[in-house]
Image 1 (cartoon, helix red, strand yellow):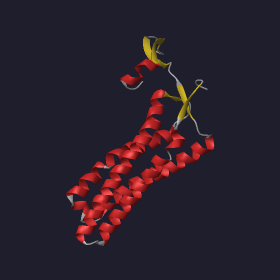
Image 2 (cartoon, rainbow, N blue to C red):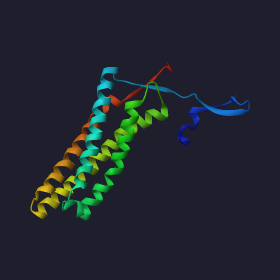
Image 3 (cartoon, helix red, strand yellow):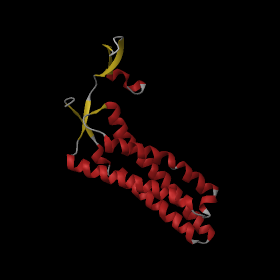
Image 4 (spheres, one colour):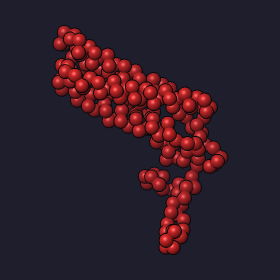
Length: 180
């Protein structure tokens, strides 16, 4: 059982525990959901989303591993650090998508569909804003090679998360009859 928003999807059931004492357990009574796309499209999307999200994470970390003026500039470094929050949330959503087994309960549907879509959009925006700030920094610094590489890596990470966002149609779910 998750947050308060999902409390009405569960009912309390009294059971006898293996040690003989009475206990209380939550039983799901809400709606079940399944992906609208066919199984082959879901399989391809799982592989694609996993690869793209990991690529975006790696491309976002690499610029921090070498010396560049952008990593020491406040308006670039703050945006870059802030972009890791939606990126981490995206990784959690893609992980849930890759390892979920349909049919989904409402809580898992929200964590799979909603989290992945919202986090990919936020990641693309934050990484894009960081790339623009780094482009300004490159222009002010005279286009040194480490900063140009920094910009290109951020732009590629932004593109990877944007592809996940624009491929969101495969994440759509529909209500199904029940647990199979």
